[in-house]
Amino acid sequence: MAFANLNNIFQAGLNDFSSLAHDQYRYQLENNPLYRAWASLMPKSPHDKSIATIPALPVSFFKTHKVITGEFEPEVVFESSGTTGTVNSRHYVRDIGLYEQSFTKGFEYFYGSISNWCILALLPAYLERSGSSLVYMADHLIKKSAHPDSGFYLYNHVALADKLAVLEEKKQPTMLIGVTFALLDFAASYPQQLNHTIIVETGGMKGRGKELTRKELHTRLQDGFGVEQIHGEYGMTELMSQAYATKEGRYYCPPWMKVLVRTEDDPFDVREYGEGLLQIIDLANVYSCSFVSTQDMGKVYSDGSFEIFGRVDHADLRGCSLLVV
Image (cartoon, rainbow, N blue to C red; front, top):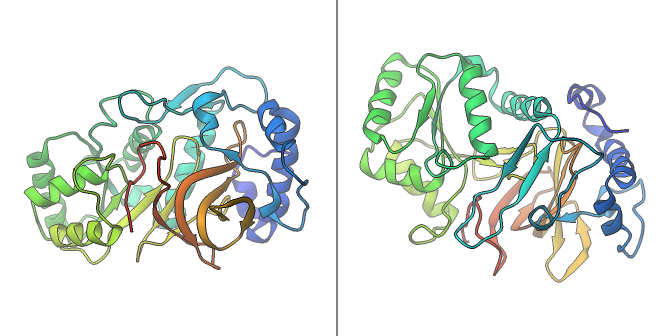
């Protein structure tokens, strides 16, 4: 049976993830005709001993089909970013409160109470279009922080640099969440020493300038902001949850999300760790599909953390990082 309250995951504990995932699989198989049709094409049925055997829907289906579980009128439709001529993904959200619960609990799982933070968001391009799940999340976190200096910044780098200087003087714990290209531009134009501010890059180069390895990107940002670590947020329009990298570029999931890996030449060879294409289970995707295969290349470690290497050749440009190794 699907759950609508993520507290159930915390109460059940991480050891029950497999049973919860199989419950979600059966629920969506029964109530999502698209997923049922896709799963029927698989060579074998999943078994309860392994979450790796649960069929995953290609993320591209969110571009071409209405991926919903059950019948409902969505409270909001999130749409991915893209370039001219591309088809964007759409996520039909039945319960916006579930999304808010997921990203709020996910944030606090890694960073503690939002009320302790001043949240600054540098999200040009995303702010200039409608339907961005990232903007919705940032706006909610800004409001929930209740800090008078929390807010959005577009291209007003002077104001942002001044605000950071004031917050640093006050020793206020601050989080600057930014799209990659904007953080690079800001760090190059207004370098400064930040001692009380965490930089969280959300990806989003989208072909802007020379492609950088993650190491090159982080080195530039570390030099520009005078910080030892650059944090990262991994999310996408098709998911209700996010993973965070707090050090060394390795992302960790909240308890209701897990990343698997499949080999590039065999879509049915799915494992719980190794290198290949990432496959995601997001139990907060109650009313869409919790099992999604991506076009992101990476490595999943035995502790469940993962790295992103980049995207497979010919994959669509989109809002997540287009970093190469």
